[in-house]
Structure formats: structure tokens, C-alpha cells
Length: 350
Image 1 (tube, rainbow, N blue to C red):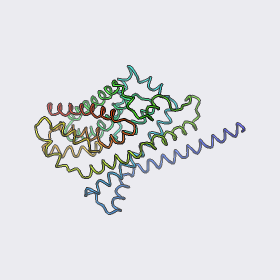
Image 2: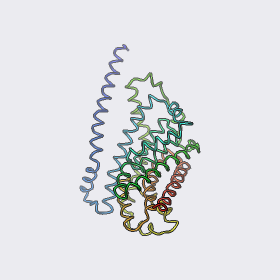
Image 3: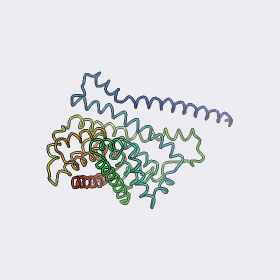
Image 4: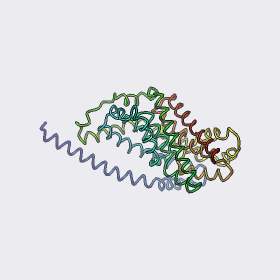
């Protein structure tokens, strides 16, 4: 085939890709900005009210499902394109060894400006892994993103003052950094699922990034979406459905009834109770305020809050697609230990 004909065909394909990305981006923004309104409309159309348990649970599911899937698709596509510039080996080399500790700090700090709930942070977690970022560094981000973000800090500052907000910031970052470093030192990559291990091992077919055209880079991003989203979306649905049910039906008064007791097991009990729940910082902080208003201890309630937004059961269900049970249990145990210490320290200092 004539070279000029090939160039014209490739140019036409690239043009269509760019048009598709542009239209898709506009549609993505339009849908994402109207998620609450769309969920409200559907709940109203089926005759439910958000004042009921069922209505709240249905609204939660209708809002979070497209939100997480939109984030998953967009982030994985971008990471797929970026991966054509930097091979997993090069990225790992940049952040390994002495750089790993710095990577944990940077990843945890990045989490402050990404106000995602735990399940929304999972797409970024998978994207980081697929780009070859070390496992411990990805966990630092996964912990920090939902737990320590500007929404949580602003709300805590408004309700409890700058001392509480600053202490929460420092302790939350410390938990994310140390937990990520511990998991990294344990070298648990073997407990990733096989498809993730292949990506980390560089077994996925790759071409020298300098030799790829923009058309090939965009096609690589599309292939990345098909591979990753195609594997993860059922877990997203199951996890959010579980979270929606708990979000709509777990009574607030039940938790407040024992969280104010001055006994040693109040903090671990609060953490255990928070794990099955699922919401973001903006959703849980009003509950935190209500619990403290009912007499619950601040450290106990904040430990509960951290467990809800950094150790939720729906998050574990979604992570199960990429991680084996041993690694999930290690992650939960390390983070839970850090959260327990935060709870006791807050109760002791305040």
C-alpha cells in the first residue's frame, strides 16, 4: 500500500479519535456534574423518598455507581496513554529503593487534594499499579485519598477548630505513609492477582514509547480501559450495592449508644463497626458531629470515621479483583492498627 495512503488513513483515524475524546470529555463532565440531580430524578420517578431508608439506599447506589465508573474509565484511559511514555520498569526504578520513602510521602500528600471516597480511589490505585508504581506507594495514596482530603479538613476545622483539623491531618498522613512503607517492606507483590503481576513484571506487550504515534498511544489507552474496566466493573457494582444498603439502614443512635463509654474497647469496637460502612468524608463528618453531640468521645468517633472512609468493606470487595486475600488482610490489619493509635491519642490529648 502506498505510504501516503497509509499516512492519510492514520491521520483520519487520529482525527476521529480526537473528536471522540472531545465529545466523550464533554459528555463525561456533563454527566458527572449532574449525578445528584439524575439520582434525585430517578428516585422521585419510582415513587421513593430520600427520607426513607430504601429511598436513601437507592439514591446512594444511583449516585455512586456512575460516579465510580466514570472515574474508573477516565483515569484508566489517561494512565494507559501515560504508560506508553514510561514503561513499568522505568517507573519502578524511579520510585524504588531510596525513592520509595519519598514516593510514600508524595503519594500520601497527593491524596490530600483528591477528595475521593475509598471506592473512588480504587481506580487510581489500579492505575498506579498498572503504571508500575511500587505497591507500598500505591497503598499510601489509597489510604490518604479518602481519609485526608480538603473536604474533611475544612469540615473538621469548621466544627472543632484548627487544632483538631491539624492533628487529624498530621495523624492521617502518618498512618498513610507508615502503612504504605510497611506494606512495601513486606514485599507482597506475589499476593497480587495474576493479571496485575503480569503488568508489574512488564509481561504486557509494550513498544518503545519514542516509536509510538499519538494514534497508537490513544489506542493503547482504549485497550487499557477495555482490559481494566472489563475486569473490575462487577466488583464495583457489588461493593456499592453493599455500601448503599448499609448507608441507608444502619441507625445512627445504635452507634452513639456505646461510643461514649469510657472503656478500653470503645475505640476498637468503633473501628470494627466502621469497616462495613461506606461513605466519603463529606457524608460521614455530619454523622461524626451528631455522634459527638450525643456524648461520644472525639478520638473514638474519629477512629470510626477513619475506618468508614479508609477501610470500608465495599472497598475490600472492589480491591479483591486485584489483590489476594492475604494482601487485603495485611492492608486492613496495618491500617486498622494505625487508626486505633490515632483514636487513643486523640482521646488522650483531647
